[in-house]
Length: 240
Image 1 (cartoon, one colour):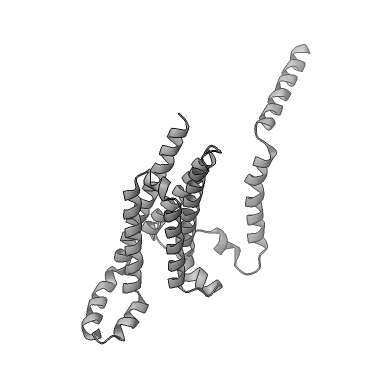
Image 2 (cartoon, rainbow, N blue to C red):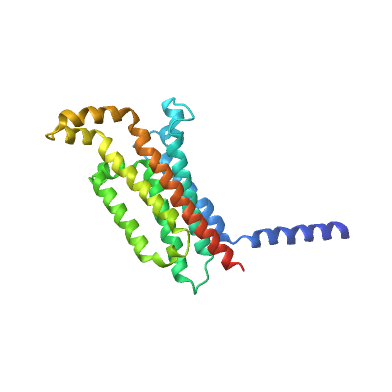
């Protein structure tokens, strides 16, 4: 009997320690948002539930490799965002510039990842807000420029050549997007030298995806490498 009471008390104490180990708010932010998303997706009357829950490749009957280059870019950007947010949360209170440098970098990376994932600049913003793609690119460019100017000091302390190259390739991708897309062909056909320019543009059309998305992936890799290395060095120095 004594041994049974001892075992029960020991199990009770261990169970109490398990619950005390994790604060209640952790369970709240873990399960409440996810549950709300599922409930809203089930109850909303506009889109069939299967379309919201199933993978696009399954719904369209596509192959696993469809859009793989785009997916890699999204994963890199999202991984960069998580890394910057995590290391930023560990920054000491006295290093406020370091904190905001990582938080803003993580925010921009997350925004670009969501944009690429849901095609916000191509479909979302024009359809919902009536914002043209060109305006979105200009706003993103202004945001990144403001980030670079504001945090030029911490940027200069790290591998800033990677960042410069990343921005160059991203800008190159945007330029190719504007010169090889359908709207570019309309513009070229209205120019005086269209007899020479149209054949060149038509020759580039089959490789338009590579010309646009190749530099974009290279630019994302350089952007991610810069910020992940900066976050790693900040975390390493902070733990000394």
